[in-house]
Every structure is written in structure tokens, then in C-alpha cells.
Image 1 (cartoon, chains in turn green, red):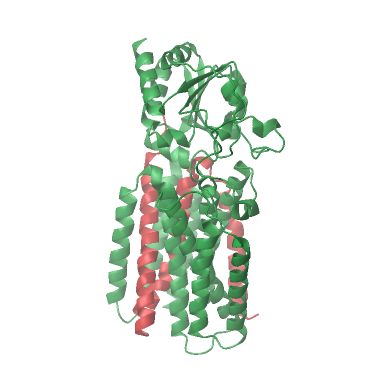
Image 2: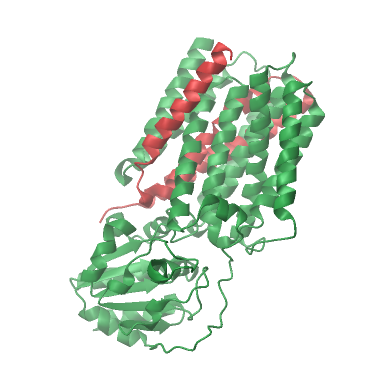
Length: 457
Length: 93
């Protein structure tokens, strides 16, 4: 039986890899996800035949409760809330891994070997950090907790002390007699570390944090795999750990930050920078009518959406505008910056929900050289990701960040509430260019007006 | 190091490389479903949770197992369903 179980686990691991491979194209992605789910089903079913299981009451209860909560939240969650959803899912995965590690420790009859103790401590620590860290991140994203960084004196010192304490206890756990009290204290320290490391991180840096916690949840599962000497856990955990690390790295690059800077730098304030700009500069404020006329005369338009679009719930009307323009023979495309949203790829999901075909969505590197040949760049709710200060203003927080070359387009239309700077606090040159039309107001109202005018003309 | 641990370590390291190879091919377009889908896969820890909850060892470990099963199934079921919901929306012109 053990051979059959392990062979079934191998099949699961292969299905997970094939499933992730399916995500390399939107055509095969849904099938890929189904393959992964099948792999999971096989692993669960074959485990239920395990000789160690003598009572199914708690298993059935647990699966029933977990499935209902999971399914209902998956069906109900709005696409704008996807980052919080993923954070909560990360947290439950991490928490489950930590709990399994403790339960396994309680079942041990003899003193565990060094390998098992080391991975047990790691699983416990990473699992609890993931659990509480994810919950704090979700709370911030949902607005239950304040998004702004929470800072107090000696914060880093306290974290460092806690981490050293956990490591010291872990070492003690491995070399001397393992005891339940040590397990509990390590878990508590892990939980505190999760909270303390995420509260000082601001809303704008959440894409990085969620990606990192994603990676942690995988690593926690892999460590639990070592404790149980279960290879399917090790393989899956490693896959997810790698995936989270890649995304973390991509997000850091796209935001021009390094990981240490995000975790310890306390930048990325949710409220944006100071509203008062030192020098008063002239911008030309235009009306929806001006924008509609300009769009109607264009041959090519690139739409640049930012998170402000989703805040104003203007995705649907934006797509309606794109359809109307396309009907007039205008070439309309969307340019998506990697951090346009609250998590990696978030903007693509929001636009897909608004029925924007994915072949109109272009990633930054694929479209950036086309701006100079484009009549109108229509910017809705984006700011820092189009700020040319990133190119040439040494010393400003954005310097070096890859941006969309909106300022290279022949004309620019910016739909925005006010002139307030983005997260970086850096004023945006694009707003003051002669070729830029600023249309102030709520993005949805403005776009609705423009659509009406374009339709009518 | 003992034999089984060494083999597990091999598997772990090689799987990380496979992960890097496979995931770097995922376009930014699908990064959100990638996260939720990969996340559901990390719910594989449910396999360990099932045994803890069903082995009937002690009241405490069974209870911990129960909570682990609940959390892991939220992770698995929620993760795969929400990923499917998102992927369904991606359509071509």
C-alpha cells in the first residue's frame, strides 16, 4: 500500500508541474488549473486510505467546514479584493503547515532525529509568520487596519531580538530534549514576528509583501514535508516557494526597490505624498468634450490604466469607450505596468472582468516603444508609473524605476481627481506638458461623458 | 546525513529549479491566477493534516489536526475555485 500511495503522490507532483506549465498561456491556463486540482484530489483520496487513519469524524468535519468557507469566499470575492483573498489563502496554508508540524510532534513516540527537529522548527516558524503576516496584510488591504505604516522606536531591534530568541530556542530544541513548551513559545514568537514585520509596511508595497508571503507558504509546506518525510509536500512546497520568490523579485524591480528596503525601509505610504507643491505651476484643465474631440480624430490610442481606475469602478465604461473607438477604425490598445494594481497581474484580471480581450493587453516592454508613434495616450488613474522623473531625476524615490513612456506620445489625456502626487510623493512632469490635456474629476463620470460624446459624433 | 534525508534534500533542490524554469514562462498577464493557483498547490499540506486529524492519537493532536484540515481545505478549495473564476474571464477578441 505504501508503494501505491507514494506512486500516487508522484502522479500528483507531476500534475502540479503540468498545471503550472499550463499557465504559460491564457489558452491552456484553465486546463492547467484543473490538472493541478486533479493532482490534489488524487493526493487527498490516496491519503484517506492510509493505515494510520482510524477515525474519519474529524476529517469529514474539517473538509466540510473548510470546503464551504473556501468555496463561498471564492465565489463571492470581488476582483478588486483579490489581493486580500490571496493573502488570506496564503495565511491559511502557512497556518495549516505549522499546525501539522505541532500535531506531528505530539504523535512522536521517540526523540526525533536532528533532521526532523530542524525542519519542525522551521515549519513552525515560517508557518506562523505566514499566518499572522498574511492576516495583517489582508487587514490593511481590506481597510480594516490602517494602511499607513505603523512605526515605533526600536522596532527593528525588537524584531531582531525576537528572531534571535526563536533561533536560540530552535537550536536548544534540536540539541537538547525537545519539549512542548519550546514548540509553543516558538509558535508565539513566530506569530509576533509576522505581525511586527508587516505592520510597518505601507499599502503601496503590498504587492511585494503578498508575493513574499506566497513564497513563505510554500516553504512552510516543504518543511512540513521534511518532518513527515513526504515527497509530494516537498516538491509542491518548493514549486510554490520558487514561484513566490520570482514574483517578489519582479515586483521589487518594477517598483525600483530592493527587498531589504521594502521590509525595513518604511516607505510606500498609503495616503500619497504631501498635497501642497512648493511651486505653483500652470496646468491646462480641459473638459470631456475636448478629450472626446481629440480621441475622435486619432488613429491610434494607448490606454494606460492605474489602480485609480479600479477605485472609481470605471473599468466597464473604459472598455465601452475602447469599443466605440475601435468601431471608428481607431487602433486601441492597453499598456499594463507590472505594478498597476495591488498585486502582480491584478490590473489584467480587473480588465478581463470588464470584458477587455486579453490580446489588447500589452505588458510594458512590449508596447513602450510604440508610444512615440501613437496619437493619444489616455491615462486613467495612473501616476507614478508614467512619471518621467524615474528616468532623469537622480535622488528622487522613483529614479531608476521602469515607466511607461506616455510622454513620448503625440498627445496625452490624463483623467485624474486632482494634481496630488502618487505614493512616491513626486510631482509628475507629464501633467504640465503642453501636449497634455488634464481632465479633472471622477474617472467614471468623465469617461461616461466621453463615451456619450464619441457615440453621438 | 542519513539516506532518506539526503534524497529528500535532492528532491527539494531540484524541484526549486523546476519551479524557476516553469514559472519564468508564465506571462505577467496571468500573474494573479498564478499566485492563487500556486497557493492552492501549497495547500498540499492537507495530506499531513488528514493523518493528524484521523490518527486518533490524543485529543490535542486530533484537535490540531482538525484545525489544520479546515485551514488547508480553505486554501485548496478556495484557491482552485477562485483561480478558475479568474481564468474563465480571460477571453480573446
